[in-house]
Length: 130
Image (cartoon, helix red, strand yellow):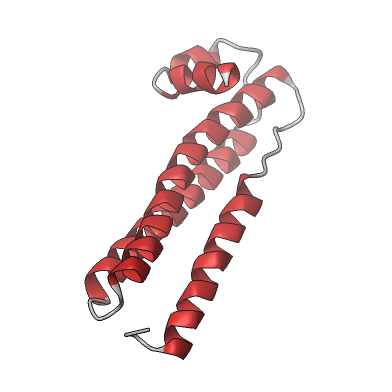
């Protein structure tokens, strides 16, 4: 948790990251940035999906609709936060010449999306009214 708090401080001070180690090959920094942007696109898609479930499925039972929408919205928020934190961690590791950090987040996100997808299959098979 302490490492997360330290990295969160660096989210808003990228010049601090530059003070560590040496400048990596720009191709690696640009690849890190592209990965960051891909995670942000995923976060936006999840947030959009959450709003879509809430707004465009009014006939779905309230509990199902809100549960699915909140799961997608929460996954989007976590994905956006993870994106910036992972960018900082990778940038620092590259500058220090360390191995890139590993994360369980992709597996967790995949499980959340799978659970939401199974719930949507149940909704489709059972029907809107449940």
